[in-house]
Amino acid sequence: MRAATFVLSFLVVFLICGTLTPSLARADAAKVETLMKASDRYRGGLALGVTWDIQISSVEDGETNDSQYTVRAKGVNALAECQNPPRCKGEVVLFNNRNLWFLKPGVKKPVAISPRQRLSGQAANGDIASTNYARDYNATLENEELVGKTPAWRLLLKARDKNVTYDKIRYWISKDKMLGLKAEFLTLSGEVFKSATFDYGNTLVSGGKKIPFVSRMLIVDAAFPKNVTTITYISPREEAHDDSIFNINNVAR
Image 1 (tube, rainbow, N blue to C red):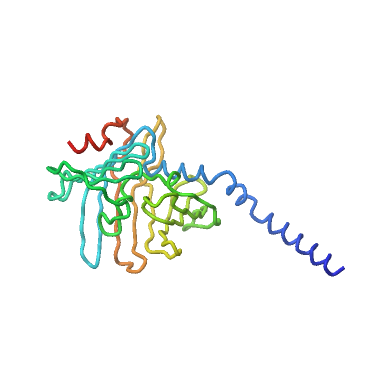
Image 2 (cartoon, rainbow, N blue to C red; image 1 turned 60 degrees about the vertical axis):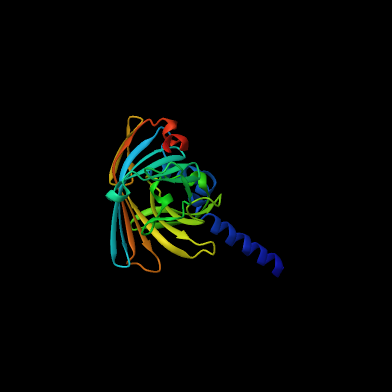
């Protein structure tokens, strides 16, 4: 009798708990992929092609460094060309799917580089290209939380491949507009080594419709919070890029 009562009590508790978060269960089953693809779109993941300029300002151990790039992206490919400082003008980082190449003016042979390698301050090479989280990571829903006053889904992203920028990411996507609001970049053991927040002050016309587009990414070193890198996105515009501009043989000429 006591055993039957215990089992019944357990079932009642289970059923009650199961009804507390029906929206969470539905999202876990049907919305994760949609959330990921939508949030990618607002951070450069457009199939036709998109161009933007970025200003990178880094404060590292009290020293400030600034640089500027023009980024052209299409699907899984991107080409980032340095405009400033003058000593680096014309240097190119080429993203071919998950392969990255560095090219310097006057040097024909491209150099293979890692997306994890630091570009400036806390910004890695992979941070400046279009976002392809939906392709690069397996995502699972962890919880519902507020980011500031904005209701958001919290997801855990695990890399599908070793040749991506981060092993694990904890990622917050807003419920209303499906914007990536915040990210924590994790070690394999799950420790946060840096974090980022995103603003969407830009508007981009895509397919005849206006959509929000990222305007700033603020990256902070978890161990040294004064080491901060700000990536500012300027003048994003949809453009139909020919695939040839992302061909390593063409860029290396």
